[in-house]
Length: 565
Image (tube, rainbow, N blue to C red; front, side, top):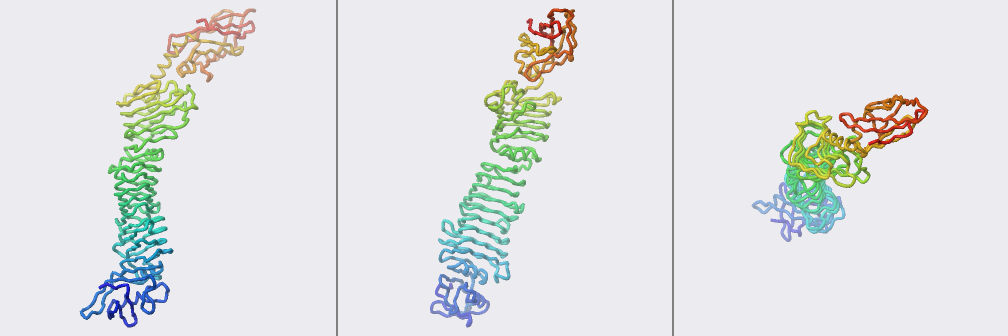
């Protein structure tokens, strides 16, 4: 038998009138009768005359004995018109199955069954809001079992829904205007069926099952480390500020990973953040989708770093950890902006540790409008370690003013003792001066020196002051010329009228403008007239020489230098 809405209660005589029928209430059912009646708080369900308050109705399952007396009142459904009535029912009436609304509630349902000073009853009750709305809901209970939150309004709860039920499973079917705060639920038991909600998890061991389309899910930094999220619907944005395990992660549009210990069974569509998550079952593999996550992964101990998207760097990538593999998955790494650094060549990727493997990657080395064409040794990948492998990788130069003597995959054999330990295949190099799959520094230098020696027939000289000769070799702005060592093979003393004393006779250095200087401590002319002598300059490591005709006046000042080639 059900209580109807036309119910009168006489708690004094333990009588219950339903329509025209009056029942004696006995045993434990009398407690329920007392709980339903007026306690003087002003928020009760039934008035002193036994009639229900306006907007309130109660239904329940009645248990009767053989004589028709009511011995049990269970599965109570309370319909309220005020939030205070809902709070009263939850705090004072046992066996409430659900709370229902008869109109919109402008205030909040706040229930804490664990607070003995405020509540006599600690219980779980469904919230069936129907087409109506409530300002917010804050529900705390230590009771075990299940509860659900249901409603059909566009936004059933105007502000926040907060649930703390560590021994209960919870199913949410309503749209919430604020946050859905999951503070504590029974392990494995939050079911989110609504769409468009923003979930915040502070639980320590929840399994949040999302079958609807959540707008956002945040794992708060205060949460425990044993939470699991199962996405069978979709999540627009997941923010992981604490470790969490996610299944169905391919249903996430963007994952913002700000904590270590985040594991995805599959890769979300986009992964951002300062930390690299583990994707799949392999604990030795992490995925990077940004400069921060890539650098974080290189600072960790994962053996394989997979790229989940293209990555644009603001500085070149230093790989200083041994035995790590960069698996590009066909994605691209590039450097933006003016990254000029002549001393290092400022490569896009700088390998400084042995055992590194780079594979299936597109590497872009961009020139910048601020660069000059004289920045030597620009590289896409620079290798300064042994046992490095580069496979199936495309290295491309982009933009104007790409450096002269640039190389796509460059080995600095001044540092690498055994170049034979560096290997790879299937690579493509485009847009650099040296587009070989691998090229060493010594090979480039030899090539530049060969070009430099070929230009020695275009030497010009000048007297920069009384004791100094400056000579310039054609194309001497190239590193090939500046890398050569010049020696004085025949000095001005070849003319018997002249005596000279030169500070340095070998390894003449450039003054930075592609010019080379012969600086004399003194030059003496023993005659009273100008004398011309031949200065022969040689190139170390080569039989090539060139001659300059040098004129010295009677005071021993160098006045003219010309090439006699």
